[in-house]
Length: 236
Ligand code: 4G4
Image (cartoon, rainbow, N blue to C red; front, side, top):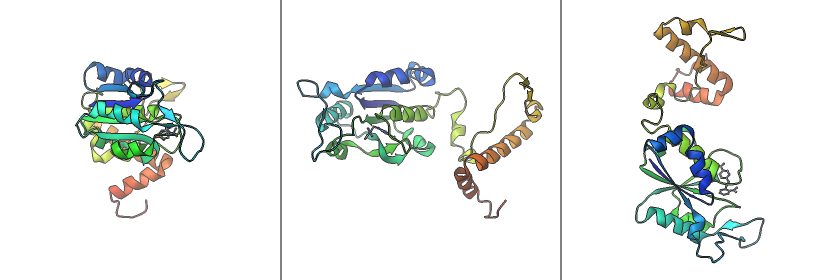
């Protein structure tokens, strides 16, 4: 997977993505991060990339020209999917991460100030995506959130078998609680079933825990899961 990130803060993207599991994935050639500085493409003599909005109002806007030229430098004649990270987008979720992970290359466009001139958005953006209903100072963190979620679905990025991620059974359920050594910590025992060595019982317990936990903490997801697994509409 190759990510092109159009941004005014390329170092923020490179530094963030070269750390931890995504950093290892970059080293192993499983993902590529190409952070493009939009400022490098301005034709303005003082390297300005922002200006006042027509009609007035608070703040500044990123101008169309440098954004478009940065995009052209990346895409050339290729038809690439361009994700604009914006509070006005469809809310990103695991399913969307799975869809975007199928692409070979992705362009992520990061806005700053009050956003970007609408005309260049109309020209290049294919997907308007938000990471949630809150406002940040720039699109870099949302872009990194999306790239992280997408990267861990690329085969080989995680040590464990990610294809499990796509198995429908546990979709919409939260993870079960997990325990590591020691067996007793702070007077608390690890649930004995996990020490039993009985694999089928462990799996059964984990599923029960996932269901209980989802019902308690995320009733919205629980309802979705219940519908998908068609419990016959009977109340439990
Ligand atoms: C585009 C338009 C994304 C980008 C306006 C970006 C939150 C999200 C930005 C802005 C963002 C999100 C400056 C408001 C950058 N904030 N929820 N900020 N603003 O995904």
